[in-house]
Amino acid sequence: MRRRKYEEFEEDNGTMLRYARHVNGGGFVESHAHVDPTAYVGEHAYVDRGAVVSEGAHIASGAWIDRDAVVHAGANVGTTAHVAAGAVVGREARIGPRAKVGREAHVWDGARVDSDESVPEGAVVRTGSRGRHAA
Image (cartoon, rainbow, N blue to C red; front, side, top):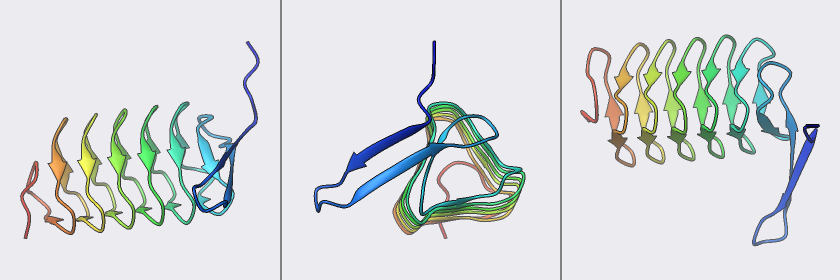
């Protein structure tokens, strides 16, 4: 079966979003997002406009990196996890499968969010903490 190279969507305000497959993993990256070539973006994953995914990061299949979110070097975002708009995932941090990191939340370097957990909007997950411990 042949895979499409591009996907296009029109937002409610008429803005067209164009997604191309990432060379490493085949996930979709919006044309105004930046994903390092060494990062992995799994099939069926989406990286939205303005988002940044740094070197060596791993975005699993079905994950969604929302608008203007940042995933730093070596971080791992699990299957079908969602990193909301403006959220930051630190270096070597781990976001478990089906976890949700809220809008403008910060997951510090090396911190972990367990599977199926939700980090509230604007919360901070510190290194050495698990789940949704906020500052």
